[in-house]
Image 1 (spheres, rainbow, N blue to C red):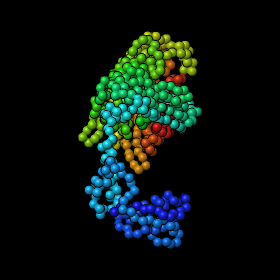
Image 2: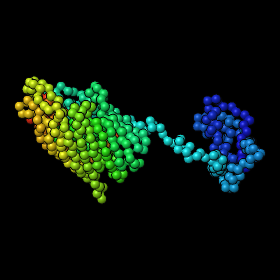
Image 3: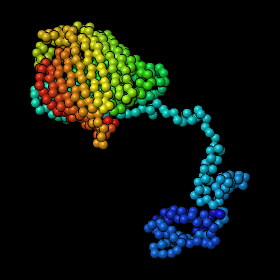
Length: 494
């Protein structure tokens, strides 16, 4: 027998009426499980919402309730209450009201599902499928730096990659990147990156990946993008430990990018491995097990000057051992003709613009890289050799000169309750021209950097490092043999 209440009188404050009625429901369900023989008067405490069957202090009369044999629910005559009938068959009478109610709801939902027409597969696909602009993701990172020199010839200290070390430079935003990317279809991905640091907005990347297959193993990449070159050039500054890329490899493709068309091949299982390495192990990302292509060769956002293309190629493979350790090794190289920019530079003793061949000079390199990923100890090394246009010793003309340089880096990954820590030491050496600098001056670099990256949270990192620098100032051609400084960088990812 089911009991419902008919309220004959009610005296409640309007503010508590809803809460008090809700509080009475469990009691009504409870008494509905036993026979009732007469009207029942209920009282409630408005402070505790406790329901009582007898009057008392601070108790307000809720109402008089009497049992009825049937509910007041109306069932159409032409349609029997299937849910009620099935529930009575499935749940014995002595079960609680809660059990019967739950069983009844399940039957009702099942009956509703059977009566509701199911949409066709095409309709479901149309509802689930997103528009291309819904698949776009926005992200990026910002690097905020502070340098503090404490000994040496700091007045003449400069670096092509880091203006924050120059004298009279205080707080410095080294990078402020904003990235837009997304899969338009299974066969097309769009990637765009802009740079806001330095006061002028510039385009860093603007390309599309066109896939030949749904596994995305084969693709071409036309547009403005990174050149398939050394490991460190392809590794994002967002992930790199050292403050800047080593001059020995970055002097080949300063700013790492150019306009061209490239082909990449990455087997599906290696795609997953590259993705794993990028998340916490300082990987370079997926630039193919094999990658090659052609580009203008004049540098980021620069027009071609000699109608001559550069050609680059790279092969790499991340080997995984039975203990989970991953070791990656590969080779890379490029060739082409580069047209230098020349001008008078009285501060460097160049009183007339150097003579040069407007068709360009042979610009070529070949190199190797090897990375033992930090699990927890890691090693990373690269070296390359080649030729490049270079200012002559008498400062009067541009000629072809040799280059030789690279770096070695050791690191150790520590995970703790206070975040991730990666201390590192990096040594680099370079002998060769800075071809992207005016007049392509010869440069010597011998540098040691030791620091630690603290990954406070996934979105916040702090790096502190000491550097001993022995390098050429490529602006005034003064060689700084001994400079010591500390650098601090706060990076936030978004």
